[in-house]
Image 1 (cartoon, rainbow, N blue to C red):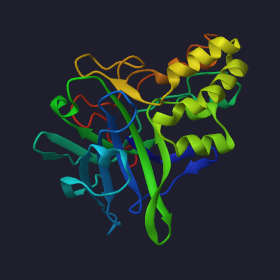
Image 2: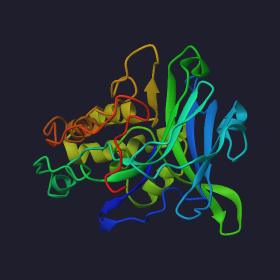
Image 3: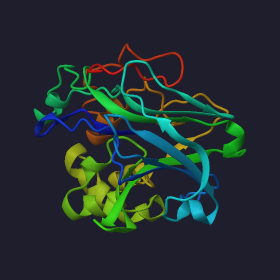
Image 4: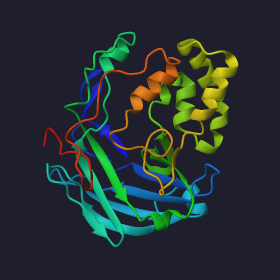
Length: 288
């Protein structure tokens, strides 16, 4: 789960230096029975920064509680340091490995080309950018014997006084929100995968106009993009879009091919060369 990039393309410029929002709740959700409802959830809270340092606490819930909202659960790791330097500070807790902190952003895409009417040159906006990453390694046995559906979400307090949580963001497959605008985008980000059928018509409409699909074709393609889950069978190698997503998978090329109905199949940007062979797999931050 990557959140809080170090820089923004529109408007251009750096973001804040604080790694994770202490008021927020970050969640990794896992559907184990194919109904697009979470059966397992991992919940993360971060401390207030002290002297530029933060700590993280990771909890696990399952069953009905995993589909609900809250920050309780079985503690997996508590008060572990957030990594801000080039050396990754990894925590081992039984069969779990956990990391949270700044890393080199693994995403690659020619943003300028996208903003220039899809005229791509391969100028990768993210090549020298950083991102705040949450990396969790769990044994396959915890996930169960079947393929799972994965997604992540971020929640914030409903009011400044705290209380109830409001979902501010969620996602699994990359580049879903370009199909949406305005109120539909807000509804999507605040929604649940189990309810994503309501967005098929919106996705289909965007595909008709962007890719020249017929209405029936557009609906068929839209239905392959929803619900917004990343399906993963741990018995097979990860490969987007069929089975999870590896860090080197060119998800932007896959998106462009769908959006344009095969008229544009790539942006000429490629995987970053600073990826690591070992956990947490993401390269060290550029600006540490």
